[in-house]
Image (cartoon, rainbow, N blue to C red):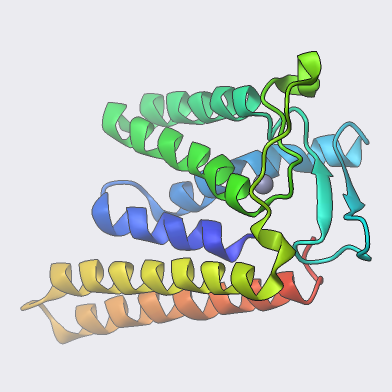
Length: 196
Ligand SMILES: [Zn+2]
C-alpha cells in the first residue's frame, strides 16, 4: 500500500491547507522511509506469505522496529516534533498524526506481522487484519482513498481560487489531476510488483 497512504495525505491537505503537501506525503510514507535502510542492512526483512510468491500484498513483513506499535509512535512523534520546530505546533501535530496513520492503515492490510513492542519484545501477539489476503479488496480500498484524496484536494483548491483569475482555477484543476494520475501510476506499479 503506497497510493492509499498518499490518498490520505491529500485528504488531510484539503482540511489543513497550511501544511505543505510534500511534508504530508513524506509523513504518510515515513515509517517505510525508515524501513528502507534497515531492510538494506537485513535488520528488517520481507518473506513471501505462505502459498504465495510474494508481490503486492503477499508479503510477511518483519519490520519489527519501524512497524511495531511503540516504534511507530516514537517515529511519528519524532517527525511531528521536527515539523513543529519548523512550522509550529499545529502543523507538527497534524504531521505527527499523519505519520502514525501509516501504521493504522498498515494494521488493516497487513497479515498478522505487526508487533506491539520493538523487536517483538516479550513475544506479544502480532497484529494485522489481513485485508491483503484479497487483492481486489485491497486495490479497492486504495482506490477509494486515492479518489477521496484527489476529490477533497480538488474541492479545497478550487474553493480557494473561486472568483479569482481563471488561470488559478486551471492550475488547481491541473494539480488535482496530476495528483490523481500519479496516484494511479503508483498503484499500478505497486500491484504489478514493480514497486516493492
Ligand atoms: Zn508500512
